[in-house]
Length: 466
Image 1 (cartoon, rainbow, N blue to C red):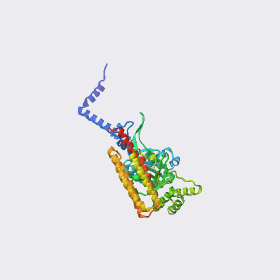
Image 2: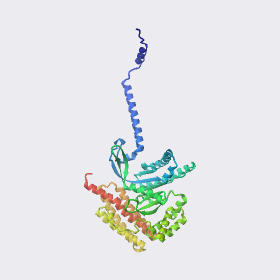
Image 3: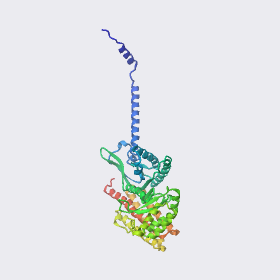
Image 4: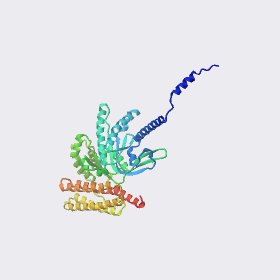
């Protein structure tokens, strides 16, 4: 039998011509594989960052997403922004599912860089809604919201050129303490923010529909701004938000209204706020007269129209649409206590002084006002110093924010005295401003800031080693 060895020889020649890999070759191969795996891991982490913001990891003191675990948490004071597309359901009904996604992604891609540019972090998208966090400053949040409205205006110009209807959005902003952390179960967890401050910002966003305005902020945000006077803001209402016991003030920011309307609102701002002061203190005829003056100059002022309708409803039926208190300055109640005898006693005395000041202004007893202002200011400075000493002694982590609020009260007091000395303001309006910026500030400060301080002090007493 004959055998053909040629194929075998050809194979052997090929094999023999390939040198065996050297240790350097193997090391180079391993290095290339490690580099490939590193790039793959970096790409994976970048993709994860689209779902879990890197800033959330920083807030939780996590250096790597692989270190996330269930139950991590931290407390911060932040400003929360909620925004939502108006009439999105009606818009989406005329679109296919694919068109809906294209529409949403087109809109959200316009808003996301604006929020990031103002040091905001998008916590989540909820359908067509955006929830964003601003950890550094309430001014960041407000400037970011105004930039969102400006970007929307430019976006709507593009939509109009393409033959689409313009979009409208509502934005609500609130400032307060939030708990950030991870929640869920063994199979699925998520980073989230839990707080009353979050709920309030969502409620404010919903209220923009009722008042026909694009942007509302809470009194907590208003009093936390570096300088509220740099923005075009006016008081809009004092009410109890859904699910809340204590009333709070709501402010409209109208800086992005169309030019003629914005200018008219600025010219009529004091008359508008005087009308609201009269309305909330139940002088309905005076409120109605001022609202008519406002609408004569700013016929597109929807909130003024709403209040005029309320006045007409009251005169026609006696129904007063206001769930807030109509007292100029309420008496101190036990429910206002922060839980610290010294702090609560100080606040009780201060509220009594504020009440005396507001009543004297309302009744025209101006000869004694200088002394009342001086006494209130002196007591506020002295007692705030005591509180700040307590915070320093206990290592309270939110001392700077608390001090900022104390300084805001003093500035409010000084500004009110300057306005009174100028003699250009209606006395009832000034008395109502004392209610908004002094007495309501004091009550909410006790309920929010001082109650938080007292809780922290109690925790320190229970676990001094921490």
